[in-house]
Image (tube, rainbow over all chains, first blue to last red; front, side, top):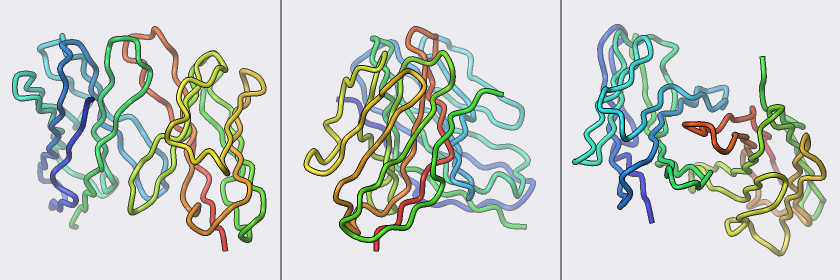
Length: 115
Length: 115
C-alpha cells in the first residue's frame, strides 16, 4: 500500500524568505501523480501544485515550486518570497495512475510566517 | 466559477440526534469523496463514490454512518445517532475519472459539534 510521510509537523519562516516543506512517499508503481494542497485557517482545501511522475521537469506555480526526486521518492515544496497569506497547513498527496480515484494524504505540515 | 458546495457549514447538535450533511459536487464530476478531519486523526477518507455507486466505505463506522448519492448533483452523509466523538470537520470533494491528474476539489467543509 502506498504511504505519504511529512516528517515536519510544524515549520516557521520569516516573511519574504524561502522555505521548503518535505514529503516522501512509498510506492511500487512507476506512474502516479503527486499534489500539494494548502489549508489556510478558513479550512478550505486548495490545490497548490501538481506533478506527474513521468514528467522530469519540476512543476512551478508562481512562487511555489517542487523538487521531485523520483528515485528517492521525494516531493518537496518550495515557497519563495513567503507571504503572510501562505500561513496554512500543507498536505502532500499521492494518486496512483492505475485508475484508482483515491488520493492518499500525508499528515500535514503547519507553516507559520513570521512578520 | 465551479465549486463544491456543502451544507450546513456549521452544525451543533446533541448526542443521539440525527445529522445530515449535504454536498453538491462540481457539475460534470463523476467521483465524490467524504472525508473527516480531526486534530488527532488528520484527514480520513470515509466514503467514495464513482458514477453514484459506492466503491469504498471501509473508513466509515457502519453502525451509525451512511452515505448516499440520490442523484448526480447531491451526496449525503448521515450520522444516526450522533456521538460527541463525531465532532469534526467533514469535507466533501469531487473529481473526474479519466482526467489526467484527476485531482480532487474540496468543498468548504461542515464543522460538526456534538454535545
